[in-house]
Length: 369
Image (cartoon, rainbow, N blue to C red; front, top):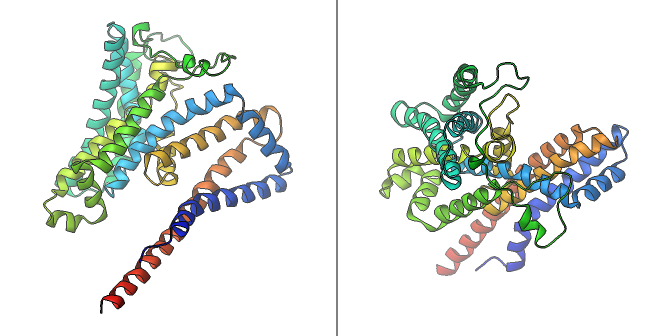
């Protein structure tokens, strides 16, 4: 006996719809309580979000969020909680920018060197936590938190003074990468089907890298043997071990892979925006990526939607403040409420599905007897 199609579709869409509706209601109540008109605030956000330039901003903000989400999701699928994405992408961005500024190569090779350097550095740094776990049993939450502090507070802070090009500059940082190491923007793709993009907005070329990462993540996880081994080890390590899957090797694979993807999170800053690592290098994306992974249920399309949603909310923050419609903090409240509501809604739907499975198994066993 199979679950009716309409019921399965309903359960699939129930969680995100419920979470979205709940977040909308709570945000409206908070807005009204703070003296800001909820309807006008939502109207301004929607009106601004439909502008082409805002869409470009949304995509630019969503790109590193998606990469951070994939990095966190790789660990989650292996039942590993990698808190170290933050330190991994900051360390990788700093060293990759320094390496990239030290050489001048033909365009594709120069960009490739920076990207590969970031992935290798991120993978090696995350791999330390993997080694500690498989050899000493150190919990990855503890080790990655400690490695975050070492990466940002010791290595980057210690090496940055040596890498600074101009000690008199207000925003000190590594030397600017030569133009051969810049990734071209993708404005021309949008301008093929719409008008020219104005106000200096540039669609980061790193979005192409993010798409490739998302496709590889989906294919490897769902269509390959190593992806099956990784998922089975995460769901039931004892059964996986009995089936011949080496758990320690899977832990190392997962930790190195999550670090390699984490190394790409800072690439929009390095390849498209500042072309250097400076004191204004964006931070906090590692922890935001955890939220993206949770909201997207660790699957690539879901995380893409979550990253776009968070990117839209981030881009709406500035316009709300400029127009004095509402405090920019309402965006943070909405993001938190959406995440909380989604986690609760997904858990409720999951329990309903489990109950349906139990009932179906009982009916089948009764019919067989």
